[in-house]
Length: 559
View 1: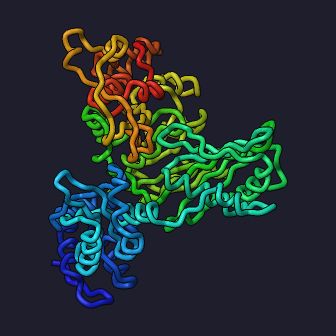
View 2: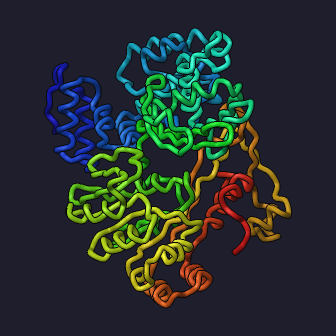
View 3: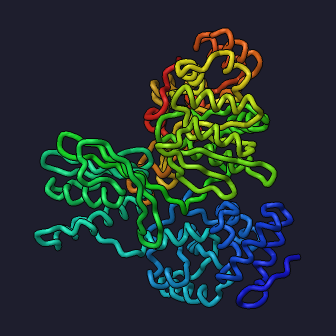
């Protein structure tokens, strides 16, 4: 039993029960819990808040544990977008003050109220009384994570000024600072991954990449671009006098209640410098591997690969396919008190608790970093990217000396990784016996669950999906429609399409004898290898996506 004081007296009963549960179920060590309790005593507040702030546990896992403890349903705001009409039933002042938000309304008329502190009885009474005034007689509580709920409240009720209104009231000199902040705030609210500033002869086009698809949000006069470009370059620490060479930079900005990092890249073009910003939200916790939405087959294969104590596991795919996120999820599952995990990254996108992360610089290359890491007594090494022969050879040398090595590689498929490493200069003798597995992946758009509709298979659909004639009448797929929940796009969020190639003695033998890619593919298939195409077909047939969306990232043609 945990006995501890806080600045406000004895530890709350719910916090004490949570602490006991986390220790009993081995989610936390006693040392980790002691640190969290010390922070709670120093700063006040709730125990679960400090556990997630310190990065000791995933916010989603802790939320689910607390929901069981408190006997409340889970509200996952990220996975299920709240109903905008229901959200507007509550005033912004009450939502912000009590950190509560109505998110859904059932067919029977009751409203689900998302909370983070169900012990705030006064707040709950005030909110339910307000909702009664809106005609809502039944309210049920649901538990949300702090960060998700606070972000959603800020998105719904935070003050937002449009770029158009700023320009309309800006006078002769447009307020560049406000325009930049408005564009970036909109990008964050829409959960965009990238912001594109694209100058043309007469226009400045601003596009956001949302769920992997670019969407134009603003078309401004080109005269405004010089001021915006200078502002962005100053923020990112770039040389504003240099406009003929590419530049990279990074900066942080507070948007609403959230601190967001941006990675900036500037490239000279015919009509000015093109600038692209990548949003990095460190408030988003890495999803634990056991909760990553992948097939059971892919999960079993990855678990088999990770269980081997030495060798290399590669994650392949194009830029923006979620390779780093997958590696972070896997690393979170192998990082324990008795394992020393160290990484080399360019850049460090998300801080990982209790994992030593090193930033690659002009003076520290991946190859040099691996050499240095080898002297740090690591068990597991992450190499952010294998780009050249020297880095590849150092990674394989680490694997050959008893280390488990994870790395990313830019190839189109898992099978193509073998040929890519050959091209880089890794000999077949070194490849054979040191490769554990290769993960190939893509990110595909997910159908909005609120508005997707079933549709009949066309002859072309039947051919692409490989559905037998006898099964056509019983096979149902879905189409995108569009509603308020998904911004009329028909899609909401993305998921991973994945293939996992495991290496065994026969595969090593084929690699050592320089077998051709078709030979490797035939053996892999005979050994149970399932391709990205197989996973895409499965996802279409279970209603997660459409053929059109999957076709953007995976070819349905047989190879």
